[in-house]
Image (cartoon, rainbow, N blue to C red; front, top):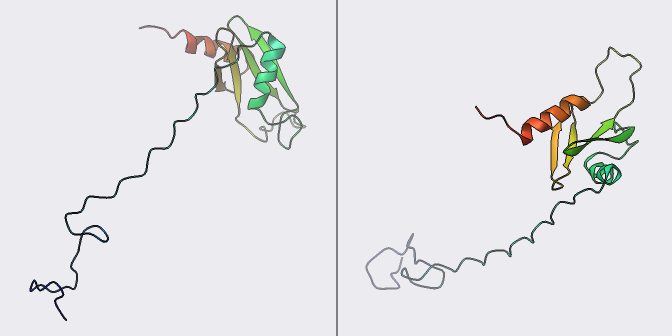
Length: 138
């Protein structure tokens, strides 16, 4: 092989740094940061139970969809609205539900914040939400 630089080194495996430059070239400039995301809109505070139900429906599958609810309902309580789905009664009451799980949604009367809760019965869900909002202090 020939030594094009006349340095006496073997040119095989020789690195030259940045493309098209010498070993002391500056690194390439990184691309600019992406623009910041626009701020999310503030939560909507429901005016009444019907308005809360309208907001809450967006968090459930459409009524009547396969394995979906037969209805979406609202339960108003002192500090919020509990939105929950109703599912059809099974032919065999001792059989487990076809799709266990799911969640309830609570929309705060104070600020419209949406909170997802386990699929508890109504009174248990309300009690659980109260504990989340007013945790006990040891």
